[in-house]
Amino acid sequence: MKKIVILTGAGMSAESGISVFRGSGGLWDEYPVEQVATPEGYRANPGLVLEFYNKRRRQLLEVAPNHGHELVAALENDYDVTVVTQNVDDLHERAGSSNVIHLHGELMKVCSSREPYNENYVKILTSDNAEIGLGDLAADGSQLRPFIVWFGEAVPKMDDAVRSLSGVDVFVIIGTSLNVYPAAGLLDYVPRNVPVYLIDPNDVKVPSNRPVTVIRNGASAGMEELITKYLK
Ligand code: APR
Image (cartoon, rainbow, N blue to C red; front, side, top):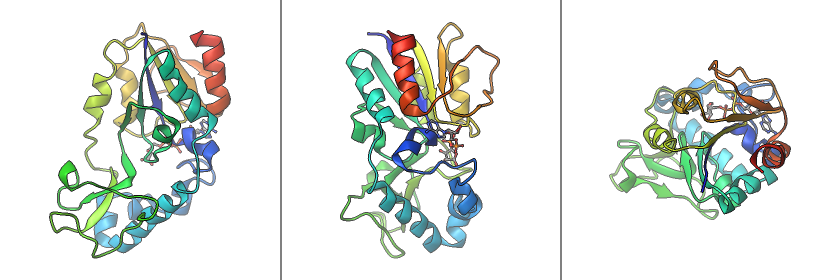
């Protein structure tokens, strides 16, 4: 089976109604990143940060995977697929993707604020228990915090993402502005002879001089085009 690795970003979930981060109306227009997506912001006002992620989790429970997520999942019928996502939503999994690496954490999980990467203390939230507040503690007695990689924190899953590229035959980028590292740097690990496709309705500055086939479309229509024009 040919191997496909797909790097996705917020644009993958845009058609599901989840706002992207950058560009007009993006999440970072509404909330200052420093306050809600950094360890310093969390230390300064943990209650505000917990509520920010409770709000995003409530929204996630209201939305569904879009056709693009479904097409990505369906690729598993014909290819060995690894999805490397920057998204913290679980829409790839809910669409049926079985091999998803979350570089920036997962919204439906919370963890120890003392040892965020210690999987023993990671707790999975559910639709009827989707919020955490001050005083909700992890098994190690520390305050529970979102299982999200904040700016400035390590990205432990990057190693798995790089390893997933061994033997890759096709690399696809969907719905990311390629602004954030190390995620955006994954492209540098793709062997030069491997074709790269980029699906995005807007112009994306690709931080590499290698040839990239651009599919100027949204995630769903773009995946249709990729499958009919390039993967058949
Ligand atoms: N289909 C596909 N792509 C889309 C769509 C759509 N319907 N709508 C918008 N896009 C594209 C935008 O053109 C943009 O290139 O999705 C991309 C979204 O870029 P960002 O908002 O920067 O999101 P992302 O690249 O995922 O951000 C990376 O930054 O804030 C951190 O941790 C956060 O994981 C996030 C990381």
